Image (cartoon, rainbow, N blue to C red; front, side):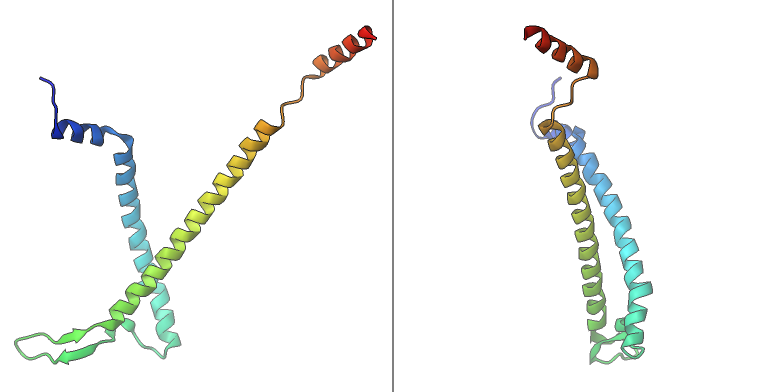
Length: 139
C-alpha cells in the first residue's frame, strides 16, 4: 500500500538531510547558549559588578508589593533584564565573528577557484620543446 498525502510528505521531509542539519544546529546552539550564559554570569557580570561598586545585577529590582508570610514579593527584576541584554550582545558578537570568519573562508576559496580557472596550467616541458621544434621546422 502506497502512502500518500500528509504523512508521505512528512516522511519525505524527515528523510532529507536538511532536517538532520537543523537538529545538529539546535544541539550545538543549546550547548553554545550554556557556554555564553556561563561566560556572562560567571565571568563578565562579576567584573561589571566590581566596576560598579560591587552591585550584583541579579539582585537589582523594584519591589511593587513586599513579601508577607503567605505571599512572595511582587517585583520588577530589571537586573535580570540587564543580564539578558549583556548575554544577547555577547551572543550577537560571537555569531557575527563566526559569520565573518566563514565569509572570509568562502572568499578565499572562491578566489582560489577563480584563479585556477583564469590561469590555465602550463604545458609540460616536453610539449613546449616539441612545439618549439615544430615551429622551427616550419620555418
